[in-house]
Length: 312
Image (cartoon, rainbow, N blue to C red; front, side, top):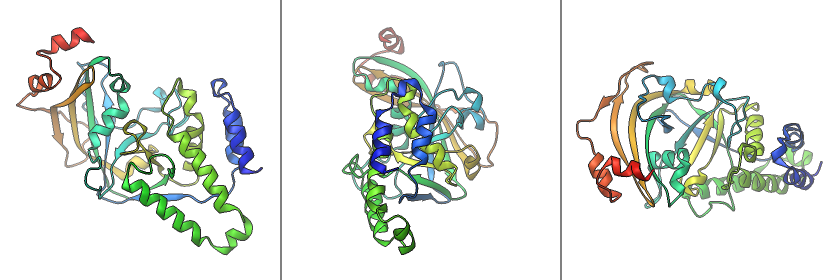
């Protein structure tokens, strides 16, 4: 099947009918394409954010800061299906250029709290963060964004340049087998980039194509997917890796924060933290002696937490 026909058929699907079989079939027809692998080496830091169900909860185990248990994994997400839970985390380049976003926590908050995008609402929310360190190389399939986010990150540009360079050195054996592989790859990569950068999500079915593609990629031997963060306009990055691949990470810091949001002003204050040395499974966060609540409230132009909650 021609790549143009595959893309056309995928675009014509009514995703609200959850056409899982059709998506799997069409993606299976893509065949050989050029792709870009990103490796996270030992020492690389990623961060996972977890909003609290209530402000009275405190998370105390490594599992609390890790992936969602499969029994609770019921929906499609950007890089995962209901059949395979994934560990989502944020990442930034090792060497960001001056002025580029390098704050993992900002990306995590923006990704995990949809209400942040509503400039008319107010919110008080507890969020826990896990700082994870890579201890064994992660092999990630990168989603190439030549059109989307190209100007937003020097690392995206680096990936695009590397990808374009690699396509000029394809072994003759593959070119003989797939003469149009460069053009074919560009078309499907562009299509996939748009799927991974969908902004207006009405229901989980809007993620079906990117999620099922991710599932297929994992079966090809990748630990996970690497893609730009939609919620920070491509200025930061996300990873989604399998539960098995989390064995290549260790939790080094666990923390709890409070998000204070009033209209278009938002600030995050630190509440508790603990540094972990021995990959502990259970621990107690240490409350910070200087609570910054009043300072945070002042930054959003309110006088008390009760005042903020009255707006929520």
